[in-house]
Image 1 (tube, helix red, strand yellow):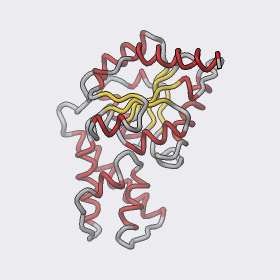
Image 2: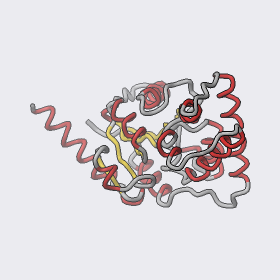
Image 3: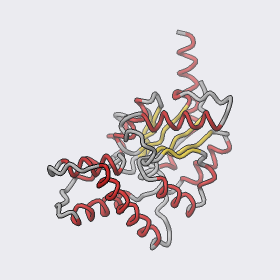
Image 4: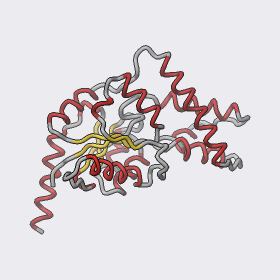
Amino acid sequence: MTLKAVLFDFNGVIINDEPIHERLVNQLLIEENLRPKPGEFRQYCLGRSDRACLADLFAQRGRFVTDTFLNHLIARKAAAYLRELQVLETLPIYPGLADIIFHLRAAQLKMAIVSGALRAEIETVLQRAQLQEYFSVIVSGDANLASKPEPDSYLKAIELLNQQNPGLNLQPSECLAIEDTFPGIESAKRAGISVVGVANSYPFHMLQRCANWAVDYLTDLEIDRIQATLGKKASTAGMS
């Protein structure tokens, strides 16, 4: 078994924008005459799509919203997010990302983004950061799939990579996911994908308990060592 593809989460892995999202979610609640509660964003939103996050936040307050109203809330938040990006002179892209992408390209590995963020948000960031050409597949929160921790978005990314690359025959065991949250890690593992947890949102020791590997920073990611480990596992499995 060889590593063929690396699948990136977006918020908290590529861009350090979780504080922006938390502020915008809290603002939405206030506009709907609801009071934000400490710790609630991390509990219901971190690593999940806006749709799942907002539905749960409103349900916790006894407000069960229709799909139409949820769409309205998501659109309001998305517009506010894009306005926030416009006033930022420099996007908060995580250090080390460019080096990792360079290394993955040199190793001829496919790359995709698997995220609960909206496609317009992802594409805006990638274009401004001049990264869009490196990700041939984007599975976003508006792809009509179940939110993480369900495995659907990761499985869809593999399906799309196979469609784009006839003969690739990509399997989950040949992928590596890079995640920063527990729902994201669970999503990838339920899809049969090995996961690196990067300690951008939670401490290293917490990620170490549930991810296959954990790193403090993207710059600590050793793709060669992970490839070797996956290769050894495949050889051991072949001999058993």
